[in-house]
Length: 122
Image (cartoon, rainbow, N blue to C red; front, side, top):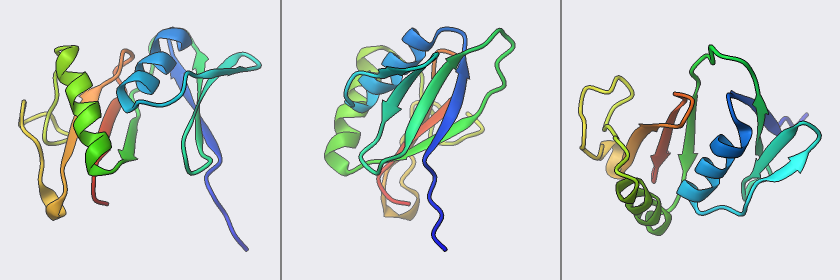
């Protein structure tokens, strides 16, 4: 038997803002509508389906494995937005890049407070 993650719903206050934010930071194609959702598709066939919901929005964590070149580009877009970032999920090491495992990773919040992570090594 083979099981693969296909999609998950990301609850948000405004799917337009949240889905476009993620697509822009990661350099992905524009989100596509599907029913009441806005879908961000990834190269491995998985999607995040953004769905409007009333606050409070429970914070979730989403990690994105990307190559070094894409990390540089995404990190530059974070800096251009003057986005806060941390080297750790507990947000104790601001403005640092984590080099755990020989790669690079940073954590940052999306518009709804979901903790996002970009990393170059799993």
